[in-house]
Length: 440
Image (cartoon, rainbow, N blue to C red):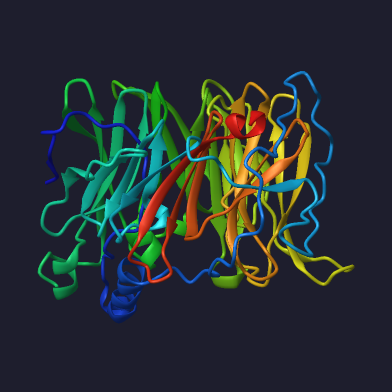
């Protein structure tokens, strides 16, 4: 059973993290190593290098009336400071908010609404911090014995989370029952009443560590929530069913997918799903979109790893497999953005650097200057920085970050990212208004 703590008031936010693994006998040792790396070590990503010289007001946002170009400006991979169309930006002290977070936080467990940030610590605690506040993080809920919290989603005045069992440290000692099947439950919390209720449950065969941690995938909007379950719990590759419910629990749609589900997203009146087929280096992802009210899933693209949908459901974006620039021999990746209503596609080349597996984690949001896209830009030297650009044109920017950034999100014109110190024990959340940067 989940124990909730509301002494400090209601919460709102979104987060997702691989908590403590459900161990099966064949992978117990591997699971322990992964947990140790995830909780106590630095993420295996390139370390940041020296920040370049930057201006404090160098980015110009496009007019909302300016049409978006078919292809956004190509980046120059030769050096950080000469990236074409991306200006190094150093926010003024008054423009940048930040707060310290606990060290045992990873990039798969973070989300935000406004300045409220939400995250899972050690797979068992849900905590929240307000970016810019010096107050200590507040514990909002904790998992019971043999349980783990793996995902959070939040929208409007509600928060949802996923609990798996058997899981947690005691599960590794076979004290929590059989590990051949993982049980999952979804809980929905009304922030005004402060009362959580279970809205879904299911089981799945934990045929991999990822399936054990994420036997279902959760999404929440202001009016509906969605989740998936394996059509055959013992054979996940047989496909999945995605259910969409209103907040009262009524089933609105049930949509079948091919392959296993990698992520579920909601935006406006649309559902987006990323599916995966194959395993290891041969896994192939597909991005699908459906209108909640009527249509079935329509394939949009084949992302390399991740995708995002805007809050109003009008735009989707996804990353492409890295490629090598023949002129410079430098690795690059690209993000593509599509207007669902018009079918228009924009392309954005991004730096990848020497680590072709470095995730871009693209995110999209709507501002009065048009769609804003944020992602991780990796320089040829291996340093990773938050980057952004407005789809309507104009210059974009790269934000210096002394620590190693590993999670970002853009909501409205607010860009939020979380970075970790080189030793893994210092984690900080940052927020900046992109339009404030653009106007100086």
